[in-house]
Image 1 (cartoon, rainbow, N blue to C red):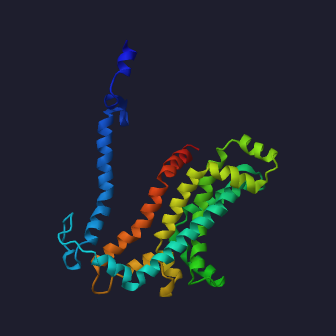
Image 2 (image 1 turned 135 degrees about the vertical axis):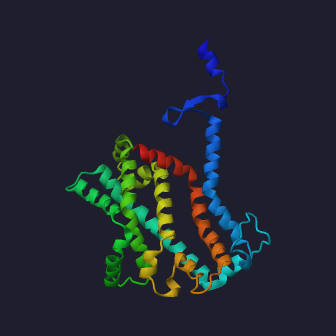
Image 3 (image 1 turned 120 degrees about the vertical axis):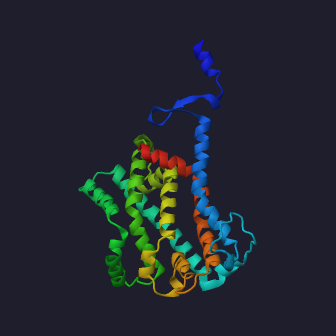
Length: 292
């Protein structure tokens, strides 16, 4: 009888153990989740509101909804200081970084997950150790390396720099995911005459779409928002990326706040689009990667 009464309870009234043994209702958790989401979105929504505010009325404004909305900030932001050119520079660098990083990391992660070779674990942990080194400490060695390779002040050199910076985490994450794929699938493929590259491209990668989505988002965001290395390695305006372009709106004596907020909104759009398009795979990839 008690079991029947328990099954008859509405879903919203089911009590579950919560943090520190406190029992909470599902509705309470929903309210808390909505509140935290609003707190997280508040800065973005405020920036969006200020981007439509006339430039002369931005300072000191606390209005959530613009009093005199205008789109002139967006037109000025896109046309001022070659912002559109910077945008496409960043987009090309970010996309190239994602493609090259995922391609090379997939090969390396597959080797670490499936093959045995001398100093395998040592090499892998050297990759992991590089994650503990702050990126700012590497700027001078990276600058000297790109100078010797004649890749200084070029988008190609900046892309390779970003690839090297994102490879350790990507290899670490994909290796754990690849190890979770049963070897029986791979053995069945090899019985049909498939080689290593075919096993990787036709079996391992299709089964690892959630993990690939996670590392692609992280890599895209890391290369899209990166500022110190871009500022150090690039000195020609035609090669500048978006973060450097945003800094151009801040002058020595005055700051174009309206166009700056509008440009910031434009810079945020690609990352939001990438996350929304891959959100389904991102959620499952993070959970599965954490378990493995």
